[in-house]
Length: 144
Picture (cartoon, one colour):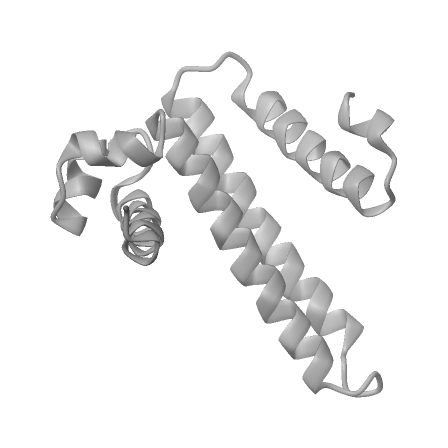
């Protein structure tokens, strides 16, 4: 019988390595071989867990967002409402979204996607709309 703990740990190791490799050299330049080497496993073992590099990226993004959300929850939980400065939060969020926008725009431009500025804004807008749809339980918006 398979050792479930080591299976789960190995999957987590692959995701952590993917986050590091994607952050260091970018998604498009990164290879599953580099990710496998980081974890000291075979490339085929990466594909045992993830059908494609894109699926691995999606999982890495989900893990990253989960960490960000958990961090926000801790900040909110540990701060009283009068200590939370709305303006400061807006500035941090704006910086974060600007950075994400620049990353998406760069990726779209490097991929030679026509009208990368417009496509990046549409891509990000749909992502925001999707998250709002989930938050307010309005599935029709997710299909837009």
